Amino acid sequence: MTAPTPPSARAVGSAPSAPPTLVRDYGDPATEYAALRTGALLVDRSHRDRWTLRGAKARETLTGLVTNDVAALAAGHGCYAAALTPKGKIIADVRVFAIDGGTAVPPSVDGVRTWLDDVALVVDVPARAAEGWGGMLKKYVNPRLAPYARITEQVRAFGLYGVHARDALAAAFGTPPSALSQLAPYGHATLTSGGEALLVVRVPDLGLDGFEVLVPASAFDAAWARVAGAAPGIVAGGELAYAIARVEAGYPEWGQDVDDGTLPQEANLDELRAISYTKGCYTGQEVVARIHFRGHVNRHLRGLAYPPDGTPVPRGAQLLDEEGRVVGDVRSSMLSPRLGGVALGMVRREVPLGAVLTARWSSTPEDGAAGDGAAAGATADDPRFRTERGVTVGPLPFPL
Image (cartoon, rainbow, N blue to C red):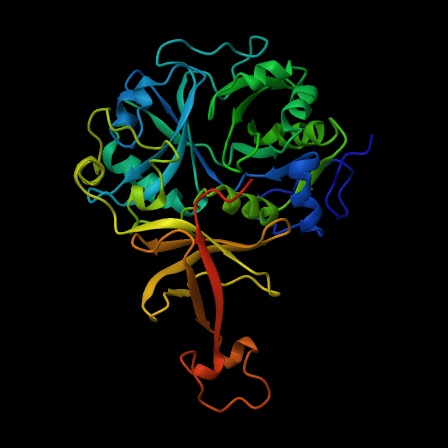
């Protein structure tokens, strides 16, 4: 069987070259995207930041830093959560995986120590949020009580998503498909490949069945090739196909859709089960609880649909209502082969679902929108270079 490989001089089945970089696509993003519903999409996710926490106080410590109840996680389970500023703004949205339940040491592979030995928690962080997350750990975590380490260079990751992801991953590593089916969202299992421990996590971020595999960097190429050749229909893909599916599923990307000026409820993190309203205190809790129990936010991340017209509506485009008032802005924006133009937008709460807004943005003469007759000194505010497109506000996720 020939393993799917991006067009390159690499050997068949070989992994993306290190150091990890974001690859937009491998030449055919439509086919890569289609694999989500016909087979499985294989994507390098090594660009994200990864951390471990150890020690008896690790779970208690992290619970005091994030919005979800890490202390309540049983071994083998995980959660989505956010770390906040004291004013309740998002420093990072993170995925937390409980390895040992705070007590037992995971078994070594064939008697050899692995990267998971003695680890209490693994935390997976968006690349753009890495600096803020690392700064928060340094500020609030006593390393003598809960030793932490950044393992991004030592441990890489890839994801397999789509209708056949479970069966292909099970075949690659010789585990029953039922063992993967039983995993809850962000639940995980430890598998082995070439004498190395792999952490296999079930992730819901694309609205389809999906798994991400955390693997020592030295074993990454072999693990990638093993999965790539496990079954027909596996397609190696880039960030574009992944991002289209993420937008359709309504999952925000830190630094793109949300940042440290965004409240968790504005980003729909309560609907995405990233917030516990019954756990103990954490940084920023007072603001989050006050919004939930006594108030509301004035804007929400919404879905925006628009007719495809060559290029996506750009990030940062203003959203105007029928009276010309600015009621929001566009965040991630994609052209979906299945749904047409899709975007995430931060929209004021009074704008109803189904409303048609105008997305407006400006293209400067340097962008090539001015034509040969562009006047000298024209600016991005010049109405001659203004572009508008109608968008329809809808709920998230988009129809999957």
